[in-house]
Image (cartoon, rainbow, N blue to C red):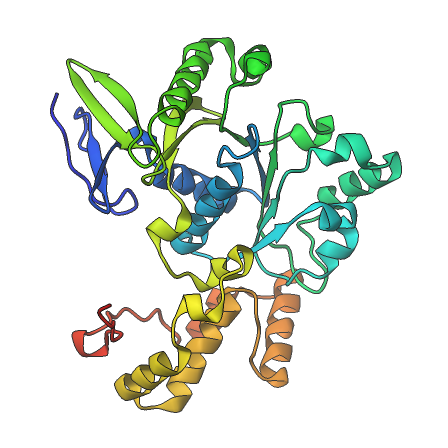
Length: 358
């Protein structure tokens, strides 16, 4: 079988009629297994509707939470609009109204981890309140309508109230004998073989020797793709409105060891993110102008939902938002009148960050 080697799903397309195997950071994988492709689908869906809901289902310690963190990272990294990522547990879910009020009025990826507790310990009043808040969550206080990507993880298909099970996309991380029938109903009878394939791949990888175990995908014709179990991949099923397929996903740090947007939800310390002063010194040596540096940092912060511009500028932005609500004129029309045009440039070789060799 012919292989088409492709380095980045976001930057290239498979030639028509050619099956493909891609390499991702030097690791060989089947193109249809790409978590990058999944993230691109989520980005596209989010662009077309105000809110989307994603469920991750599977037993404890099967990688659900880390999968959602990886997907969140790829979304904010590749989307054309900024997203802020927030990670919540039991306390935040039970007090969802207060939680939502604390969010910045920007596009949000909200990860609610292990919410199966709701069915057993939440009161009917609390569940009703959660349902009410989720129905209007895209209208965040203090801002215009924003994009919301709601991610929820739980252990079994029916572990949460029915309204929370409603979703646009589903990930499955494990297949228990007691869950096969429920998963078949959820995903569709025609995907029964894929459900059993995931069960086999999970067993194949987990029973091998630690640090050496693999799971193997047979491509037919004697061709196989061998994945290292947790080195860096784990297998999952992914169901969208157009089908269900096997995917593989690594931990986020394997993709990008440092990510300031993800640092908050991963509890990374400043030491883990590097020496700030040395980076700042290098930044100043390359760009000289302190105002340029401060403005660049402010722009990156606002992309993360943190506004550090002056009150006057913040007020002016609110004026524009109100103007848009009243449909007086578009921002594009204002930009044209002010002769503001898109800037296209590259980071020149002499402006590259200084990377120390360990």
